[in-house]
Image (cartoon, rainbow, N blue to C red):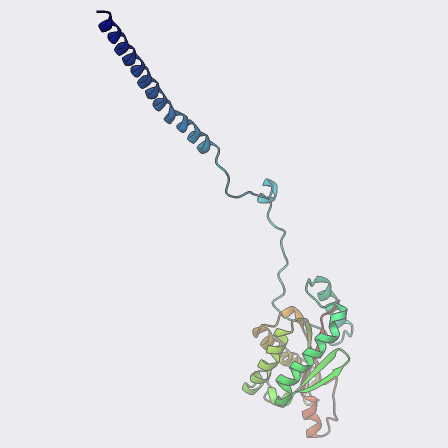
Length: 249
């Protein structure tokens, strides 16, 4: 009798402990998703930013300062004002953010000279160098018809070579001087020489040379190279000169 009672008690205790263990496991399983859900909600509410804004709100809303656009037309200088070229180039240097240092000028000019000789000397352009300054002389009969300011087709081919060099070597300022012989009225010759210089400048700008690097002056018949008494002399006087100088501080 006692033996049966002892077995019954052991069975009851095992059943009790098994039931308790099952209840504890069930409780752990039920609370684990809640904990994971809480952790997930924390990550969602506090995400890590992918980038950081460096500017302040004030700088983000303030527009940048206005910049002055470079001129789209070349400068036309008064031939009677001898100081006009110097004033113009000085103003250009003061407004330019891109120019040569003095120590760079010599090497720059040497390379420019080599490129000019390579490109245009065989085309009949007379190149004269004085220090760090070049003069390219273009005979008028080779680039304009008589009494005309429109470029000849062969002149455009010649100017294409010059333009390629000047567009590449952008630290060069360009003065274009127009000249005529003394045939006709003085005022008309001055106007014609300016129109011819303008035609050359327009071609350079069209080819990519910055307009602010160019200034033109029409001298008319006032600066002859030869005696106008002969046909040969008058032909030498009808010309375009390009004065090339380094743009340096």
